[in-house]
Amino acid sequence: MLATARQSASVCRVLAVLLLGACALPCTLHANPRSIELRRLGYIHAFNLDHDKALATFTEAVNADPADPGAYRALAVNAWMHLLYLRGSITVDDYLGSTTKPNVKLKTPPPDLAQRFRTNIDKALQLAESGLRARPNDPNAHYDVGAAVGQIAAYAATVDGKLFDGFKAARRAFTEHERVLELDRSRQDAGLIIGTYRYIVANLNWALRGMAYLVGFGGGREKAIEALEACGRYPSDVQIDARIALVLIYNREKRFDAAIRILDGLREQYPRNRLLWLETGATYIRAGRPADALPALDAGIAKFEADDRPKAFGEAALWYLKRGTARLAAGLRDEAATDLRHALTVEARDWTRGRTHIELGKLSDLAGKRAEATAAYQKGAGICRQDNDPLGAAEADRFLQKAYTGTISGKPRQN
Image (cartoon, rainbow, N blue to C red):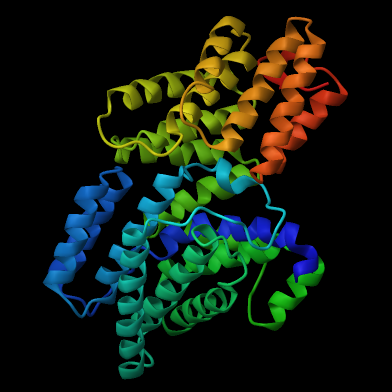
C-alpha cells in the first residue's frame, strides 16, 4: 500500500473530516433521555462554535447517564474538534488535495486535550463493547461500537498524522454499520459511515480498491453519495453531519450548486458559525463565481471581526486570502491587493501564505511585472509543497509556464 501513498493518503484526509459527523451523535436508545437531550444540545453549541458551552453540556450528559457511550464519545469529539480548531484545520481546503506521504509530521497536540480525547473515547468504546456483548442483535449497540472505532481512526489521521494506523478501526466501523442496516433497514443514519467509506474506496486506484474489497470494504461513488444524501434527508441526530460531509464531497465532485444549497440551510440553522460564510465564499470561488462569493465573504469578515470568541489558528489570514482571491477574480485589483497583503501580516497556516503569494503573483502578471510574478509563484509553490498542498503548488506551476491574464465573464481564466 505504501507504494501508492499519494492517492491513498488523499482519501484518508477526506475520511478524517467526514468522520466528524459519523462519530458524533447516534440515537442511543438505551441512554437516559436526559443524556440524549443534553448531547443534542451540546452538538448545537459545537456547530455554532461555542466550544466551552459544548464541553459543559457534554459533561452534564455524562453525569446524567454515566453508562451512555454516546456521552463519552461526545466529550472525545469535542476534544478532537478543539484540536483541529487550534491547528486551523477548519475548511474544505484542508481536505480537497492529497498528501505525499502515508504519515505526516504534525505538531504534538496539547497534552490535556489529547488525554481528554483518549480517556473518553476509551470509555465510550468500553461501554459500547459491553453493550454489544449483552445485545448482539441490537442495531444501536453495533452503531455505538462503529462510531467509537471510527472516531479513533479519524483522530489517528488528523491529529497524529498516521494516515494508515487507523485502517483496522476504519474497517470495523464500516462492518459494524453495515450490520446496523442488516438488522434495521430503516436506520438511514448508519449510511453516514457506510457512505463515507464507500466514497473513499471509490477514489482509490484499482489495485488498492481491490485490496479494500478483499478486506471487507464496499465501494461505488454514486452509492456512497446516495447513502449520504439519504442520511441527510432522514430525521436523526446525524442528519446535519451528513449534510456537512456532502458539502465536502460535492466540492470534490464539482457539484457546487448542490454544496451551496446545503450551506444556505446550514447558515440559517447555525448563525453563530461564521465559518459557514467562509465555506460558502470559498465554494463560489471554486465554482468560478467570484461576484457571488463576495457578499458571503464580506458578511463573514464582519462576523469574524465582531466575534470576541477565540479564533482558529490562522483564521484571519484565511478570510483575507479568500476575499482577496474573489476580488482579484472579479477584477477588483486594488481591493484584492489590500486583502492579500493584509493576509501576509497576520498569523497564518503555511499553505495559506503560499497561496497568498500565488494570488499576489497574479496581480503582478496583470500589471505586466512578469519577473515579480515569477518570483511570487516560485515562493508560493515552495511553501505549498512544504506544507503538503499539491493543489496550490500545481496552480503556481501552471502560471510559471504561462502568465495569468485575468478573467472572462467573471470566471478565472488560466492561460
